[in-house]
Length: 368
Image (tube, rainbow, N blue to C red):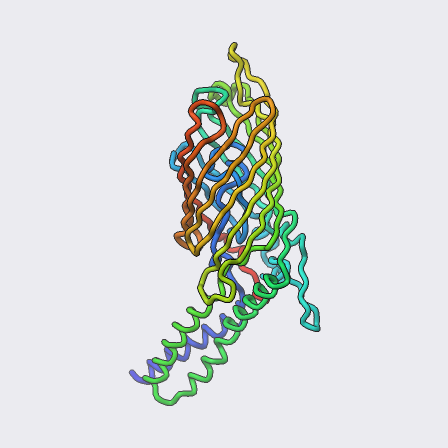
């Protein structure tokens, strides 16, 4: 029995070593998903927050609101699904880190294009310009046009990635040393302790590091079926917008598992809105622009924010909403918003959203 136990343990550890040597990859699914909405939902004005940018993504994300069954958005990140066998897809390249032979760091400010997403969504809701529930469908596009890390933030991100790589590649070396322990009980206890310390170490390096500055661009198109019938005519809505954000790390030098941030957003949006009717019941298109911003504080899994948008054009209105977000796990987050929405009547907003990221087998990148 003792020989069998030793043989089983040796084979188990040996297989783990082999897997580590051949699969030195970091699964982005272990990082926190932070996309709070989708561009399709933003155009349909069906989100707790109307101002957001994405960071670490999943290959596939689902966005569901509190009116379950009446709204759903699916978001796809093509980067993780195209050419999965590309050996040049490393975590540092995904984040835009470049390091010379002399160890000097630089960054690719256009690497945020890797975060491009396509979204699809539908809602069954009462739009302000119509007054009765209508089915509408939307497609959206979102990408990061520019993202820039300050020299200090770039160094933190690079150092953290190197530590993650060391933790992954260092495990087999330590294991071989432990296997040299003669006493079987001591060897098993050492291996058990190693597993605990190893995975604690990995978790410590899976922090989300936000760019100091970033600029996102998005657009969306939506069609509303006038008679709630597939054969009926449609009214259309189109929008394009830019969102910039400045992120300040609040707990610099902390050994905490999460980073705390203060984020300041600014956004500008142009919309052609055909979801409006005249007194005679005919549909007409309104043109307007939205300008506004948001202040957000992130404390680990919990985030608070307030956003304000001023709408001007054919109509003048404003949106003033406070939001709260809680991250349940690396793949699931919930957020809610309460306040004043656009429009003069029925403009109370109270929405609750669930955001779920799925791994599709394509979002694993080499650490270095």
